[in-house]
Amino acid sequence: MARLTLKTPLDVRVLDSGLSVGEALAAFNAAHPHAGGIVSFLGKVRPDGDVKALELSHYEPITLPRMCDLAETARTRFALDGALAWHRVGVMTPGETIVLVAAAARHRRSAFEAADFMMDHLKSDAWFWKRERRDDGWRWIEPRDADHSDRERWD
Image 1 (tube, rainbow, N blue to C red):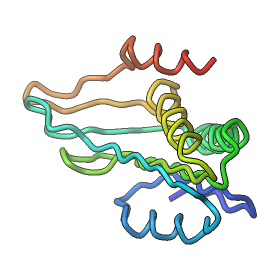
Image 2: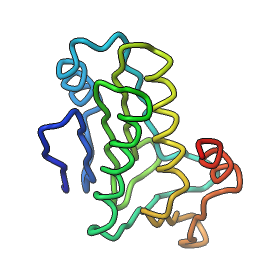
Image 3: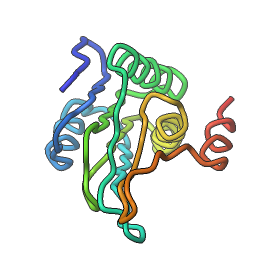
Image 4: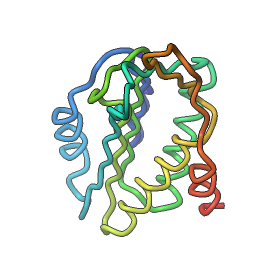
């Protein structure tokens, strides 16, 4: 597991095994007692059709620093008390957690927008390579046009 350990309100991690969403969010909530709202998003492997597995790989020297930059951008842009971005790598099966983001802010709108902002960037920026295994073998997955459009609305 790669982890950012700073004396800042950011918690950014790349995980090669499962994560406990409840524990993560409880700790995040406790770390931000002055936040008026905390918004989180949990992304899971979809059990679409005959998907047997999803594999995410990354280039470690780039992934964590870019995720840290994203969390810091969200923190300053939306005046957050804190931001959390955890992303799995490796092979996962349908129903397993891929990503968890959370934003703590004084006001709910900032927290909602920040979580949306982080997910739109994580979904479309090329920090992770994805492929899925179906009955006929492995195939690479590219971001959809809608993923790029979602990200571009923040520019």
